[in-house]
Every structure is written in C-alpha cells, then in structure tokens.
Image (cartoon, rainbow, N blue to C red; front, side):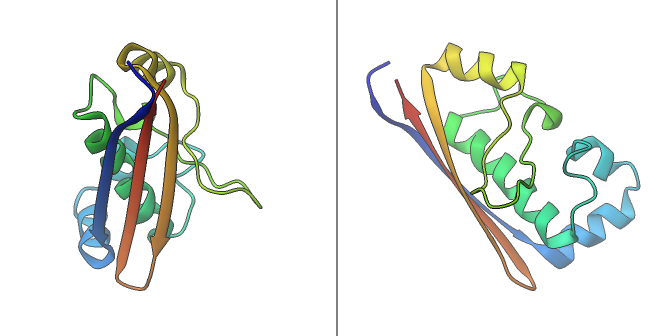
Length: 120
C-alpha cells in the first residue's frame, strides 16, 4: 500500500434514539462497549459508537472486527484515539493502514465522528 489516504469515514448518531435502543436492549451496552468505555456519559458513548462505525467505513468494511476490538477510551488531556487492541492492529497491518486519525464531537442531541485512515 502506498502512503496517503487509505479511507475516510464519518458517522452521526441521534443521542435520543441511541438512548432508546440501549434501554430497549439491556445487553446492548455491554456488547458495544469495553470496560474502559461503558461508564462514560450517554453522549460520550454515542460519540464512541459513531467512531466505531466511522472506522468501519474508513476501512471499507469490518474485516472481522468486533465491537470490543475497536475501543476509544477517555484519556485526560489527550485527543481521542483508538486503543491499539491486538485484533485492530492486525487488521490495520493486513490492510496496509499505518495510522488512524479520529475526531469526536457531541451536542445535546447529536454525536459525530470522523476517521481518516492513512496508508503506509
């Protein structure tokens, strides 16, 4: 894979609809989020769900990744980033992706994430 942009992904989540889905399916939160994410406020969870979806779009599919393989922990004084889980690292290497860039934002009713995957 040559250097440059491998893919770009964007996803937006309606926070109210997301909350309703989590309430409707009690086990959904545990299926979608890791222990580092699960205790975060609802808007932060919605943004992290958007990040996971945006990453899948940037990679052109899930490539066998599961929700827990894609983690976005909150780290004080650092910009958002994906944790380097073993499965994610392997999939990125297989695809020739050298670096991921992540931007998150949320308001009262919307959460959004952008992902840029760089080839290397």
